[in-house]
Amino acid sequence: MQSDERLTIDTPEQIALELPLAGIGSRFLAVAVDTVLQAALYLTVILTVIFVTRNARSLPGVLQMMGPAMGVLFLFCVYWGYFAFFEIIWSGRTPGKRVARIRVIKESGRPINAYESIGRNVLRAIDFLPVMYGVGVVVMMLNRQSRRIGDFVAGTVVVYDTVTDEIAPDWRAAPGSAAPNAPMTRVTAEELRLIETYLQRRFDLDPLVRDAMAEQIAARITAQTGVAREPGHSVDEFLEGVARRVRDVARFR
Image 1 (cartoon, rainbow, N blue to C red):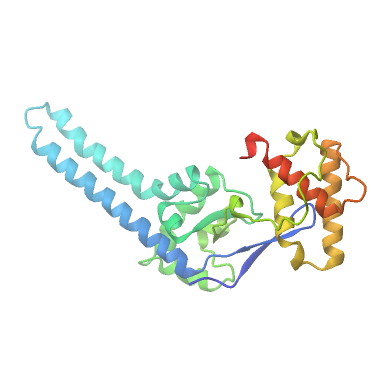
Image 2 (image 1 turned 180 degrees about the vertical axis):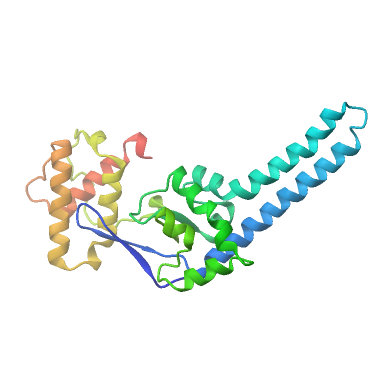
């Protein structure tokens, strides 16, 4: 079940990017998958501890007690650290979120950091009350962005996952619009993403807004690289040529 709500982010270049917010259905699917994986880990640890305990009778008493103690410690870490661990190493995703194709980000659209991930997941215990995320579901239903208590505290939202590499710009100009020896290595990954996002969505914009955005982006690229638009080329042709040449730089492949 996909939410119709969207998170609108205004970039410094005054380009509005919209990210579809994940609904309760998608988030429930993600939690269900993660819960099954947690249960599998619990079961594996418990069976391992039982097996080790039964086969360690010849060991000293202290060593025999270490097995159950380590098992309890591991279960504690799985319960409290599972979600935060994966969200930190997978940029806001857990195995369940990958299945549901959703991820956690900041309200600003930036990736979350470790502190925000830990903060939102510590409050998962409150969202879970009284059972099966009862409080969390109620709170999500009472706000348009489907945020639970942990999201409000950490300043995060859950959106449908979009991969930058899947952006397919509408190429219209012939190759070679940018200067052959242009120092395109100065163009950052963020600027390339900005160019390609504009090229993909330009025909959905009002012509006046589109022209203003294109000029702003072109001016930024010119200031960054020293490469100006050639006579007879439109600003869109210039940006398309720049994007092609930047994509030819190995570090962006």
